[in-house]
View 1 (spheres, one colour):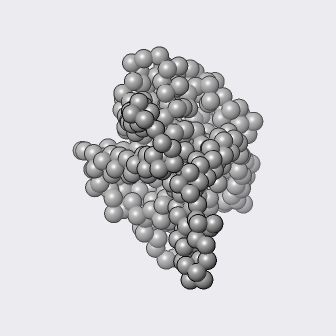
View 2: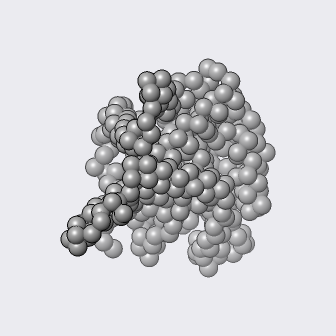
View 3: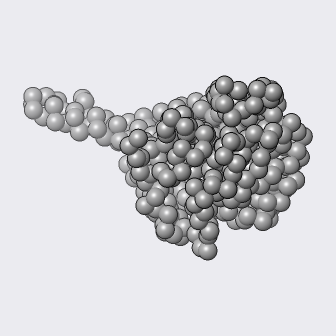
Length: 392
């Protein structure tokens, strides 16, 4: 099988501070474009100019302000600010994307009309149009993306294996990933995900990382709701990068209250036939992190058991292929918002869906049930995954 190289492998040493600086520079560029467009389209006096700068500064700093306020002020206020700030983030992304198309049209129109000595003014968008068209389309895309983010889908996968005893019959596993409880997605939004999990009637529930992503008191209610799901063989979770950003002690406390067994570089056996091998996300801790070899963890398991590798990031260790039957991952959100998905597809070759790594090993990359940042998805609907393991 040809080896796929993940762009993340080249970024493991990437410092979190540099990432934040990189993000803020790009996000600052979004605001600068919007400022230049609206300034060219609308004449404003000194007061209007000052108000515009103040609002843009608030929008730019919103992600940092939201993080700073979590757990210090009321959850209702944090949620209100998060919705404003993250919807603004999505609006700017769409505004930039549509603006690029408007500028492309502008360039082509100038080239064509000039060649035929026509009336250029009739074909070139005005400054007002160069602002209003991207703004209007961005609003429409944000509205549609809000509906798509709430359209949770249940996907199904059936695997037949000789390692599943006939007397067991079927083991149904439900995978959730990237719920991101926190910020814009608080306890009230979790109920739909929990309802879908219950309707699937799982024997086992696994969370492949980024289940929690905030510090508000809403975590207590979310943990209570998850604790009411009691599958036959239990609930298991692994740490994603956001569990580390939250604080691994706080994440561990949530897992215990929610009834999850937190598999941190260790294995749990269910039904006497299936091994769940949990791996910590290597990108979660930038200092003093312990990198565990997948092959080493797999070598400690029973040879006749069906092995499921639970790994937040969809990185595949080539030497581990063939030593597990199924790897369940998430992290990518399938890009969450087009056109950002173009970038994530370049960074993560295993982007979303099923990948047959070898005759023995299959990888499923979950699109995620929640959202990071904006409560919006575009061309990347959320999912929970139902896997039925049957005797061959």
